[in-house]
Length: 240
Image (cartoon, rainbow, N blue to C red; front, side, top):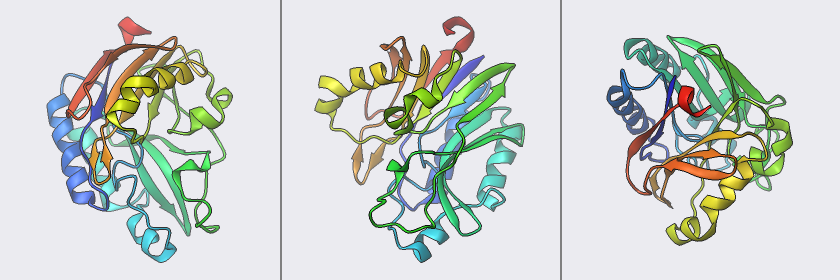
């Protein structure tokens, strides 16, 4: 089983552009990976919210929206499963969520359980966190799912002997990444799982260098260069 980590550029509040990026990555990955993964809140962009509920509600997407339905169709058309973060609306509630879709079907819809995705000192009761950790079965393998700050705030809740996929949005400077943060993220990931795949999108406003990483036992085994769109392919059968 091959998993692709797509570190592609996204734009805040520009769902059509971000969708075009997802389809472009799916075309590139077709026949090369079984599951293609994007970062936290990739569909709308992590900084797409303004914390005015009336505005943010319109930016969020329901699972039954045309956008999500299009992702379902693409997963069938390209024969590639898809994992992506997005800002979800269910009723009057908003979440930072991550959907996993295979052959048009929803395998998992994980809602981040930690509050770091929002400016919680400005938000109200509409902005919520999930109550359960995320996991799904893919190609007869159990895969655990965490979003960004989950592994910093409560890594023990995501501890697993199986593979963990970690979509994030983290905008350190290049110097910060190279001097300390890459190693820090690798070590933190090891508190939850031996094998961790982390994917971070590229963004230009604000600057986010992006990147994709395969961590094993707290060490960086493979990665993509910063600021370079690409798909890191990890052969899970060989790695795990």
